[in-house]
Length: 315
Ligand SMILES: [Zn+2]
Image (cartoon, rainbow, N blue to C red; front, side, top):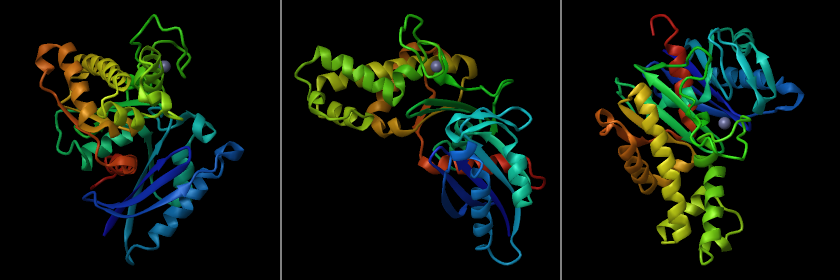
């Protein structure tokens, strides 16, 4: 049998999986990420886990190659252009991994990998007409996949909707250094900030008695009828729906995929996002499908494996 590895390298751990050519996950590992010393141990640690997983396959098993997703921009030539969370600067991560594993390695950005994974084996399977995925967590990632190909763009920033300006009058700074990015409103931090503003207007809110606010608590309290939480969810969904309507004007996908921690808001959140989207979008795109991501933390390693398959002859 022939196999492909997929790795999703993250700031706290790497998810590593070995797949058959049909996309079935055969075995997986989690490798802790050690970021000290400029992240120099990360690649050797993953390579050791790759060797160990390879040893569990049947005798004569052939490893075709590996895809590796990283939390940073990847240049057209395959170089990583800085991963703050890993301690990496500009680095030939694929080349270093290929030397240690003895098979070809292909690099892509992690948001792109998650989207590709969902299109290949997840919530947006068989979606030939393009899929746009937005990942809502600490930050906001975005990716556009067309025909199982990542649309990475000239600068590796294709689909990065999180840093689209949605409020030019914002006074607080975004993590990217600019002001008024989508991420400032629809990330976990953005949602908590909106909740705090709403708590000021609703002194009766149950949110005031919570020690630490999170997306999960805000959704729970909204479903329980708390006015400040309901308004927070509505305002956040409004901004996200409008931003996705802008994305539709550019790439007109067949489906939008909502992923990341805040997708835990489920149908309650999704319905409000879709409502806002439909109010804002130009008419040919009104019926675009919306789905919640289904592969969770595994999406990136699935997508990384699929990305590698695209380069490997005969796959
Ligand atoms: Zn920004």
